[in-house]
Amino acid sequence: MPTQLGKHFWPDWSFVYGLRLDYLSPTLYLTDVFIILILTFSLPKFYSWVSNTHKKYLFGFTLVLVSFLLGLAGAKNYWAGIYGIGKFLAFSFLAYFVARNYKVFNKTILFICVFSAVVFEALLAFLQYFNQGSIGGMFYLFGERAFNAETPGIANASINGQLFLRPYATFSHPNVLAGFLVLAMLFLFMFSYKNQHLKIFALFGSFLGTAALLLTLSRTVILLWLVYLIILFGLWVVEKYKKGKFNSQQLTLSILIFAAIVIFIILQNNFILQRFLTTKLSDESLVQRQELITQSLNMFWQSPVFGVGINNFFNNLNAISVRENISLIQPVHNIFLLVLSETGIIGLIAFLFILAKSFLSILKKQNKYLLLCLLAIIFLGMFDHYFLTLQQGQLLFALVLGASFSRTINE
Image (cartoon, rainbow, N blue to C red; front, side, top):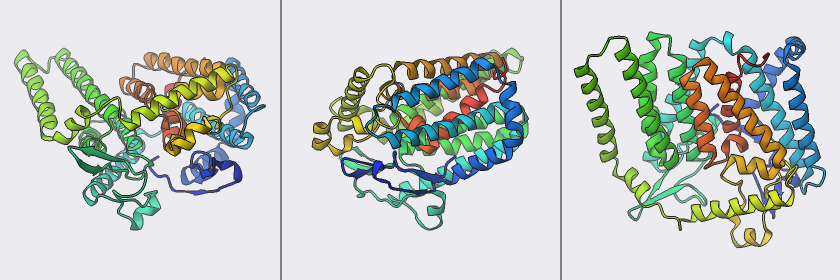
């Protein structure tokens, strides 16, 4: 999941207002090669899987796909839409494959993979932060891009008049790195839940992941992770107390120690506090987001049923606004508004149905970590778009959905 290594292609339709966009560039990622291999080796079983899947899901999926194609009938960028549908089919297959096979996956191997990814990304984030730029060398092969604090468009944070380069690791933005770390740390807890030998590694990986998360200065994700830590700690205390492993004094002491650690982390990281305290509604990033929200709603009213077409958000941005501010050529930072503007009310209803069905399926499993993963995607998706627009975010989303539906796909 962490690597963004891939080969980009630049046909004419990947340019918008004379600028080439990574979002529209047909790209063969290393992770795409893995998906293709999974599909290839799954072909002998694929027909039987589909045959055993409840027909209502197949029918619903077909209707959604048809609505996407109808939405491209009047789209400004037809081929970008076809590419977007191709990506939708690829990640739909991945989610379906995970749903079909999740119960038989070796959770220890999954833990090792996720643990290695968290440690690698955290250490690379530390190096980039202290170097105030990319490391280069072999890290290019893992998808690290070349940048420093003076690279145009780079994500710097201005705190008390001083610029801090926010580390990217091998991701396209610090916010994406932060989102990955939160979900990956939840995966660590989930895959080690029934294995006492792995729990110490899960705690170590989470310690490194949390430290790297703080360096990203991603306000929304840091706030979410702080809430999650409190929830997870509270659930752990309750579980221990019910099993009689805690008396009232030990319970009080544990709560005080946890509170002291949280307060110490906050006080010792003054630049993180300043990052929150210096946030203003007049900040350029917030003004841009507000403008993109307005334009996304305008697109919806322009084509309320089928939307303006998948991957056509950029081509429908207001030309005057874009000429005044080139940085506006980006998706709206809200996955629900992005779905609504590109696929219309039909696409949004289907999207909400999938999320609701996934939520109910997780409740049946009583998997608190998977539930927190889904809630994280929903919450973070209200402030960012990468779960639908970037390869690494799409992978995370597909895996969480697949794991969610692992027991309901035949119901």
